[in-house]
Structure formats: C-alpha cells, structure tokens
Amino acid sequence: MSRNSLVLVEFIVTSLLCCTTNPARLTVSPSFSQLFKDESVSLSCEEDDSSAGWTLRRNTSKRQRTQCGDNWGQQAGSSCTISYVDPLDSGVYWCESRRGSTSNSINITVVPGGAVILQSPVLPVMEGQNVSLQCKTEDSSELPADFYKDGSLIGTEPTGHMTIHHVTKSDEGVYKCHISSRGESPPGWIYVTEKPPTSPLPTSSRASLYVLFSVLSVLGLGLLVLLVLLKSCAHRKLKVGEDGIRDDVTYSDVKILDTKCHRQQPTRQDREADPVAVYSVVRTDDVSYGEIVIRPNRSRGFPPESEVVYSSLKSNFTASQLQSNH
Image 1 (cartoon, one colour):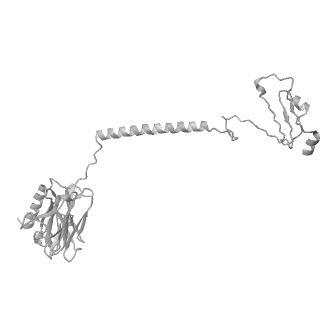
Image 2 (cartoon, helix red, strand yellow):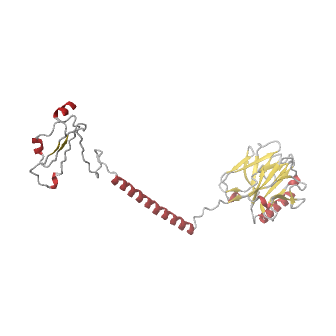
Image 3 (tube, one colour):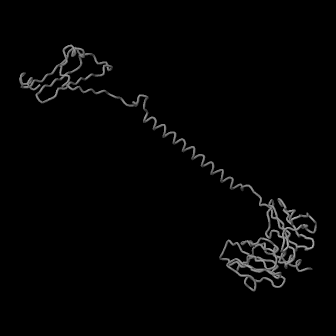
C-alpha cells in the first residue's frame, strides 16, 4: 500500500473516531486539501467554550497525536500556522480539548514541486451547493486536464477547471485529475452533507402558540370595545349642535339697559300691556337709573292679574335741585 493510500485510510478511520462530539470546528486557510511544498497553511479551532483549552493535533506517517508547537507549527491561542509545509506534514489534523473532546478532522496532502494537485474543498459541502475543482501544476493552472471520480473518467476540461453544480450525496467520493506530460494528482475526498430537515413545530409548541394567539385576540377585542365606549361617552358629554350651542344646556337672555340713555319711564299703557310685571323706579342725586323687567314663563298657566302694584321712592330733594343735577 502506498503512503498516500495509508494516509487516506488513517484519515477515514480518524474521522469516524472523532465525530462523536463536535464542540469545536476546525477550519483551514487556504481551504484546499492538497498543497505544494513550501506553501503556508493556517488551521484554527472555532470554539464555543474558550475555557476548554483547544489545541491542534495531527497524525502523520512518522508521528501520532503530536501537538502544534511540538516540532511543527506555531501556536497562537487556538490557531496553528505552518509557514512552509513539507510532504512530511501530510496527514490528519483535528482540534482536541483538555477534557478529550474532539472536533471534525481534515486531511492535508503536501506534494513536492513539479507534481500535480487537485484543488478541492477540504471541508464537507452541503447538498445543493456548487463544487469547484482545479487541476494545476506549480507553474500553471490552465492546462487541459482529465477528471476522475472513484476511478472513472467524468470529463475533460481545456482549462483544467471543472464545476459540479448542485451537488447531491451521489457526488460524494474520491476525485483526482491528470495532466498529460505532467502526471496525476493525489486522490482527494469530497464529502457531501445532507440539508437539515425542516421539521414542523411539536404539538406542544403549536398548542402554546394557539393559546397565546387566543389570549392576545381576546385582549385586543376588549381594548377595542373599551375605546368605543369611551369615545361614545365623550361624544354624549360634549354634544354640540350645528349652531355651536350645546343641546344639554338651557340658556337665558339677560338685558341691562342703561337708563342714562333711556330715562323715559314706562307709560301707563306699557305697564298695562304686561299686567303681571312689577316696576321699581329709584331716583336719587347720586344713583344711576335702572329698569328691571321680570317676565315670568307664561307657559306655566298662571292666570293674569288684573291689577298692577307700583312702588315709588321719593327723595328729599326738590325738583329744581334734581334738574340742576341733570
């Protein structure tokens, strides 16, 4: 069995063992599974719990379960950078916490200069997405190439680039490419994950939503009725006619006559025109004259009086004195 095949088998076995718990997610940049020698790669543990103490580990053909910083890579927190990769860096990488929890794992293959690589996604892709494959050499990326899946030819591209549109689980498998006079790339896995099902709400959740909707509907209806009643009461209380006069108020006219302008006393005929009126006239030297007319409501049915009672008040001043004052 070749070294590449051994590393691939180790990757598959480690992936099965490491998928029990995934509290952290391993990412890599550039996000390709195959690299040329002396390229740089950065790996990072995207963690939810920073107190877990996540570190990068790997299995290679030479050493097992070595930690970043142990003769390879430079660690910075939960990230690890390999500035110049070597074919000996080919292997399986994953994140591991102090408690033994593990993340997803990825397989990285490093080839020497002059070889051919297949740039394919290093992380699983979801159903419905497009997958881009690029067959390239270290000095060129646009040479004609043949593409294979699980050992079978699936197409030839003049520029060495192939796109698989809307992948499904049937597109999952081992891919490689071949460039004439340059050689063949190492095999690379493409994993396809299913879309998460959109399950309906549980029965208990639907019942809770129904109860909540019913309560809100009743409260809204009650508030609407209350607003209508308040508006009706306010309209009745402040009902005003078209002429600006409120219908629930009785108005009375009051007339004040300035006797300085109307000094003429009511005549006998005027007094007799209203037999139920009482007149009072006051004349003094320092008092203005006033006239008060009291007209009772005749609709009450009081019988008219046949006599009128007059009252007069005379001062001690003489007629000549009164005329001199006026």
